[in-house]
Amino acid sequence: MGVTTRGGARACVVGTGSTAARADVPPARGTRGVVRAEPGRRQSRERGGQPLAAEGAAANGAAAPVRGRGAKRSAPAVSDALEGASTARRRAGEAVADVASLPDDVLEVVFGHLARDASPAQYFDAMLTSKRFRDAGMSKRALSNVGEKVLSRATAENWTEGASAFAEAAVDAGSVFAAFLVGSVDFYCRDARRETPELAAAGRTRGASLLARAAVAGSPDAHHTLAIMHFNGSGGKRKDKDPETGAAFCARGNILFGSANAKRELGHCLQDGFGVEQDVPLGRKLLAEAAAADVATPAMDAAVIAATVAAAAAEERLRKRNDINTLNAAVAAAAEVSAAAKHAAEQHLTAPPVARFLLDWYDPNVCGNVLQPGTHACSHPLCGRVETRRHEFRRCSCCGRTRYCSRSCQSLDWRLQHKFACLPLLELYGWIESDTESQDTAQVHGGGDDEEFPSSSLASGASSNNLAAMPAADAAAAR
Image (cartoon, rainbow, N blue to C red; front, side, top):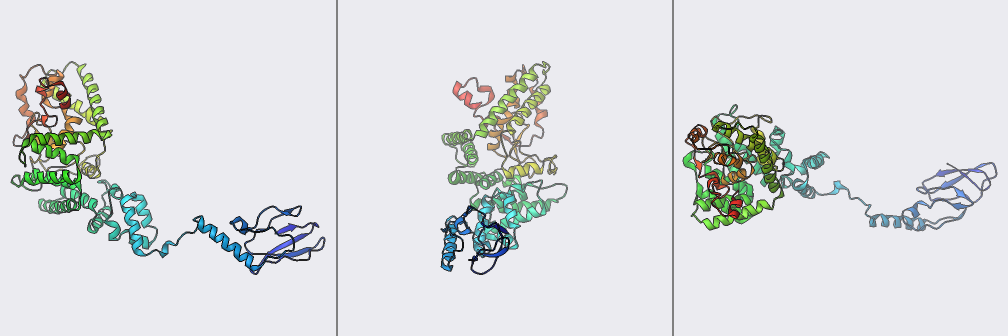
C-alpha cells in the first residue's frame, strides 16, 4: 500500500513477521523507499504530520502513545499492549469456550433442559449439529426429561415410525409425559379394520401398564384416566368395574395435585355415594372448588359465554321459521342449536395434546380410523376417549342421545353445548306445547341396555323442570 510522505514521495509498506521497524532515513524525492510495518498494526494516512486513526492495540483498549516519525517501540511495550487487549476482551465477555471441550455428562444435562423446555425444532436442530450432540440428545439422561413441548409435534397425523420410536425411547428412559402419551395411544387408539381382538387386547394391556407407570411417577392426567378406566371397567367386561379404586384415584389426584377434574369427579361420587360413602356436603364443596378453578381459567369462561351467545342467535333464527311443531323437528332444531354452541366454544378452547391425538385419530377428516363395531366416543368435544366394548359409557337419562365417559365430561359438556339440546329443555324453548308426543322418546333412546346417568341435571345441580321453584341465586348457578 502506498503512503504519501511529506516530500511528496511514495513509500511502499511491507509487513514482516519480525518486530516492527521504521526506516530512519526518509526516501529521496521522487523515489520509492521501503517501510516495514509491525504485523496487526493499522497504517493510516497522515495529514499535516498527525495520524488520523489509532493503532490496533489502542482500538482494543490498550494504551498506545502516538509516536513521531522514526521512533521505535520496544518489545515489552508491544507485549503489554497485547496483554491489555486480551484482558479487555475477557472482561467484555468476548472469550468463547470451546464446546468440544465440554464433558459428555454436561452435554447430556444441557440436552435434558432442552428436552423439558425447548420446541421440537430447537431440540432436533441441536441434535443434528454433530454426532456427539446426537448421542447426547438421545441419552437416557436427556430423554428422561422429554415433556409436552418436545412431543407437541407427535400428533395422530404425524404418528410415523420415527415419531413412535422417539416416544418409545423416551418411555424407556423414564419420561412421565411420554409414558402417559404412549399409554393412552396403546389403550384407546385401535383400528377395527387392521387389528384382531387379540392384538387390540394386548395393546390395551400394555397401555394400562404405561398409564399406571405415569401415575406412579406423578402425572395428574394419568390419575384421572385410570379412575375413568376403573369406573367403566374399560378394557374388560362389565363385571370388571371397580368404582372404589376409581374413587381412590380421584382422591389421590385431588390431594396430591389439586386437579380440577379429580375434584369434580370425586364430588359427584360423594354426592351419589358411588365408590365411596355418601357425603353430600363434602361433595358440594369439591364441586364448588372445581367450578372456581374453571372460573379462574379465562378460556373456559369465554367459551361458555360464546356458546351461550351462539345458541341464542341460532334459536332466534329457528323461531322465525315457525314450523317446528313436532318432536322430531324440535330435536333437529335443538341439535342445530347445540352444534352452533359447540362450534363457538371450540374457538376458545384447546384440547390437551393427548386428547387432541385421540380426537384426530378417529376424525374422518384427519386419520379416519374406525371404531370397534357398536362402540361410541365420549360426547364431550375435548375428551377423545372411546368405548372399548359396547354400552361401556353411560348415557344422559333425559335424552339418551349423548354418552359420557365420566361425570366431569358430562358436567363440562352441559355448560358448553348439551343444555341447548337436551329434550327436557325443549318445553322451555317453546317448541313443544304438550307432552303428548313424549312417548316417541323411546325411538331416540335406542339400545335400552346402556346404563344411564341419573339425569343431565348432575351437571347443573338441578333438573330443568324445577328451576322455577328454586331461589333465584340457586337457579342461576344451576344454569
